[in-house]
Length: 379
Ligand SMILES: *Cc1c(COP(=O)(O)O)cnc(C)c1O
Image (cartoon, rainbow, N blue to C red; front, side, top):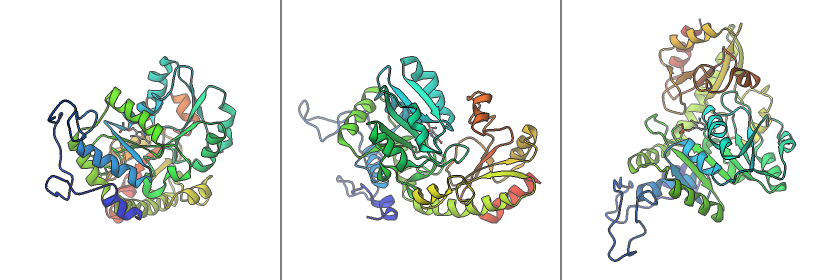
């Protein structure tokens, strides 16, 4: 089955009870048993729920994996991955990282004795400088947030295999429409399904997909034992979102390209970060591992003025000033004061998150309206 068919049919079967074409919302916490243990595969909804299971099968299908797991948020999904580790273990992580992931690693898991190294991975060989006998996991985000750096997943997987480490890829920005990390050698793919997979800014959810059965069993155990699952209604909404992922992504990419080019020619704009430009440092890797370049763009304005950046985002009318990304509507954010405020200024500036940086999640509205909006806001 090709990707554009998998988004609609992958892992799905019509409901066995009445043949419902769409999986019903099984809004139940428990399931009747005829005799102790005599059930139809479902005992309690933290462990299994038919609507969630339909979604988990869809996750597995679109990421070319064998096992999917749905969580109450993207961070809950990451939390489950780190719980595979033991005190004393070490993780080599991308340095330009989603702020909440950084906070989870440094404010929660550090105190349980897990050590994180935050490393520039644009040259994957740099990872090897941080690997020792305690290293267990490489954590990769690509494109990175918000600098749109590209990390070579295949090169990372070769390093992971050589040192017998797990490789996990946060695929939130790219989505499986653009890149399929498991096919490039990753062991775990993670999503904030809150973003493009859900696609309509109405659900918070996380996902993991793996190929390996032993790894899946360990993660299912953690999912059930820690209990950060999502509800059936949210599962239904994300399942519905996935059905249009391919057509939404196609438009996100088209609009993204037009806006990146517009900003690049704007006299007040200093620099545009978008992997589709030939002069992007890892454009060739992006071309190799991605099918297109997506709708996430960051840019800075000349003079690097904090107040001016705030004024621009306040003036936008069609772009909504908001955290998050990946919905049908265009959003704008100011990372230094919003998504990355939890990262110390010194740390964030090292990775390029300067005061004038503005991040756009380009939606699927009419491109002329979007460009006109940027024009009136930037001036
Ligand atoms: C939003 C996001 C997360 C966290 O997901 P939540 O659903 O908000 O918990 C993790 N990684 C990336 C890249 C994100 O954009």
